[in-house]
Length: 161
Image (cartoon, rainbow, N blue to C red):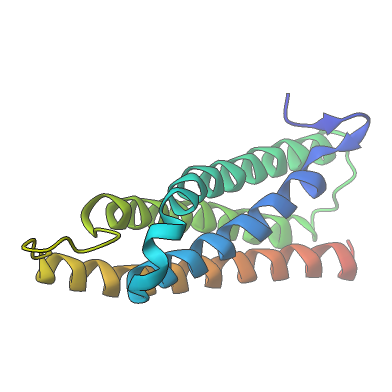
C-alpha cells in the first residue's frame, strides 16, 4: 500500500510533505507561543498543522519502511549499505516522535493560551510560560531530527551502496 504512487516509489514523494510541514509547525508554534499579536490570525492554521505534520511524518516513515523492505527483498541493498539505511530509519522514527510531541504542545497552546486576553480575564501565567518554554524546546528537537533524518537519507543515496 505504501510502496508506489503511479509507478514511482512513494517515499521520495511523501517525505517532502514532512520536510515542509514539520519546520513550518515548529516556526508557527514558536510564533504563536511568543508573539501574542499573531495568535488570533494563526490559531486555526496552527491547529491544522499540528494534525497534518505528524501525519506527514508518519506517512514518510511508513513509505520509507516499505521502500526499504522492497529493496531488501529484491536484493538491491548490499550488506554494507544496510547500517546506513537503518540509521536513517532510526532518525525517521525519532522525527515522528518529536513531531508528535511538538504537535501536542501546539494543540495545548491553542487550547490553553487565549488568542486575546479579554478584559477582566487573567491568563494562567505559569501554564503559558511553561508552554512557551516547551514550544521552543519541542520545535528545536523536531527540526533537529528532520535535518538529521534528511541528511542521513541524502548521504545514503548520494554516497551509494
